[in-house]
Image 1 (cartoon, rainbow, N blue to C red):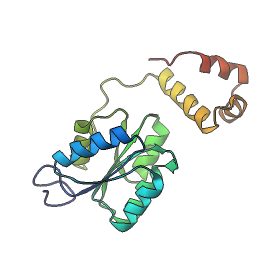
Image 2: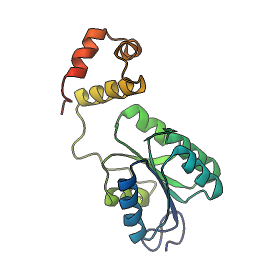
Image 3: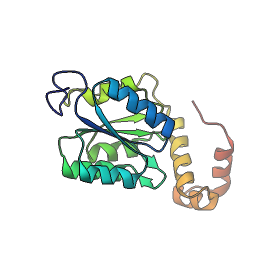
Amino acid sequence: MSDGPDGAGAPGGGPLLIVDDDRPFLNRLARAMETRGFDVVTAETVADGLAQAEVAPPAFAVVDMRLEDGNGLDVIEAIRARRPDSRMIVLTGYGNIATAVTAVKMGAVDYLAKPADADEIYQALMRDPEEKAPPPENPMSADRVRWEHIQRVYELCDRNVSETARRLNMHRRTLQRILAKRAPR
């Protein structure tokens, strides 16, 4: 085990809360992190994550951004309020800059796009807080970031084209053409 929540000493260390609604991914990551020395607790919903944060705020957390019952940032905020030294990572299938900034402002030490593997997550959790995360190997193009943002807003509007177009301040037909195309690289 580790000497403390900063990860000094032996690899891994301390309680780790993983919150994700993708059960196979959650189980694989939990097993992988247990082999790295963490005491893993899992949750599949925001409500379960909040309950775990209330009972025993973890030294480490890996939280999916979008869960079936809400936003994973609520769990990040609850942990930060109870344990300011906790090292937390946010995972998401929807990589956009605004969300990354919000996650970091709320106390996350890193923001990883899914599918992130256990090694990436472990390295992010154990990285020296003063050390900057390395730039991505294959960053998304500006067109891809725009497309991801449009898709995210479209999903948040329950796939309602008119409402999405209104929120994006875009003509409805233009939005329909964009939605009909494949994602840019």
